[in-house]
Length: 98
Image (tube, rainbow, N blue to C red; front, side):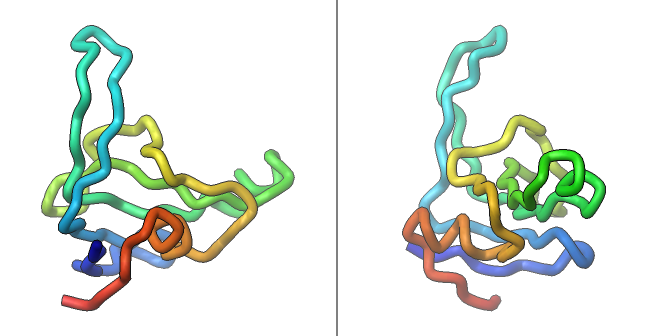
C-alpha cells in the first residue's frame, strides 16, 4: 500500500493520497462505513501536548485540497509520537513522493 505525499500544508500537517483508503464506521445519523482516500496527518500543538502530557499525531479525512472534511480521527492516529508519517507506516503504507 502507498501513501503519496501530495503537499506539506504547514509545519504540523501533511496531505497524503492513499492507494487503499482508510475506512471507519460513522456513528452519527447515517451509521455507515465511509472511506477516505485523502488524509491529513496532523501533529497536535505544543499546548495540546502540554495539557495531555504527550504528543499525538492525528489522521483526518480530507478533500483533494487538504481541507479536513471529518474532524473525528481516523483509525491509526497515535499517541506519544511527533513523527508525522509513523501512523501511516504502522498501518502498512509506504510513504512516497508525488
